[in-house]
Amino acid sequence: MSINSQRLKSIVGGSAGNLVEWYDFYTYSVLTIYFAPSFFPKADPTAQLLSAAAIFAVGFLMRPVGSWIMGVYGDRHGRKAGLALSVALMGGGSLIIALCPTYARAGVAAPVLLVLARMMQGLSVGGEYGASATYLSEMATRERRGFWSSFQYVTLVGGQLSALAVLLVLQGVLTEAQLESWGWRIPFLIGSILAIAVYVLRRGLAETAAFEAQSMDRPKSSFSNLWHHHRREFLIVAGITAGGSAAFYAYTTYLQKFLVNTSGFSKQTATEIMTAALIVFMLLQPVWGLIADRFGRRPQLLLFGIGGMVVSVPVFTALGTATSPIAAFGLTLIPLTLLGAYTSISALVKAELFPPHIRTLGVALPYAIGNAAFGGTAEYVALWFKSVSTESGFYWYITALIGVATVAIGMLPETRRTSLIVED
Image (cartoon, one colour):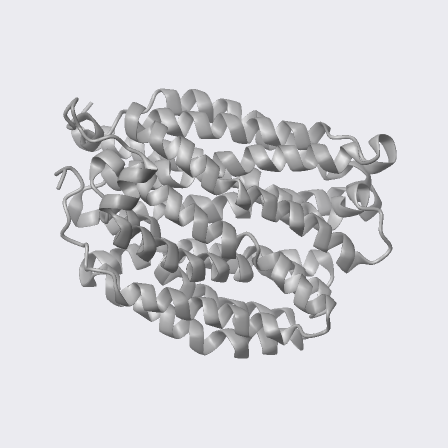
């Protein structure tokens, strides 16, 4: 097999695994409105969503632990070994949720099992981001790293779209009562089966040249070495992630609930709006990747930061009173288009900041910390603002976090010409 064919096979294989990984993770979010009553028997729908969102956040809080453990594992044992381990954990968590008893059958044990499953999935995604970002970046050619690395978010959003697509099918063939009773389990079962297939696929991937080119006496991948030698890069990644992740989850996973709970659309209409918007968002990723290869990383990230601060409050305000699905779709595309300038190259920029011996940990850990603190809690914060009747406070909260990311982007060096194989 030629070098180019091997590279293409590896990128496709790594991307396919990433899609299944994120399908499993997002299935929880898109099905929350259906299974929340089974685990949190409260009369108020917002209170039920708030409880489910808290467990969603638990998965994010486990990400730093997973990124630390599996980041070190990937740096020491290889990128593909980390990829295989992460998808195995994800599949196990999905299977637990698929078979989990309800509160009516098991009492408090039901939400406890749900928490344990989300902890497994959080560990998995914590390791997945760094491993897949590093793997895809190192397998791509220098001239097209932005383009090929953008497929991490193509498949990430593809996983989210797959979860939405399965939900749309279930909404078409099952009644709402059936979905709330048992139908919500089907997507989790599908995810666990797919994870097994991807585990086998990832075990057969080629290792990257950057990992194999390292000497046996290379420095250890550890938190102490990361913090001591790459503190500035660590803080830059955490700052960019704080705003980028908060914006991503606000305009993707939470927005579906916002369209139901605030705008007043039906669950199915909200799902259809978000599906259409996310398809456009997904297709924009390679376009933004090519633009970054041509004009650089930093200008594109600044476009996201400044543009995101300008549009967040007006777009959320307008969506809150939108009555037309077409208008809601158009408004949603405004921040998602700007967000694509960040998501398409966010993982790549982080990989380009660190040398090979500590790259997986360097990408994963500061990202996971920023993501856990501000991305995973975005939905909870939004619902809290709504519960105290000051929902507009969340719009300004997102704007402020994007501002933090913009400051961090201003400290970012241009990394387009960086070698990912050379150690220093």
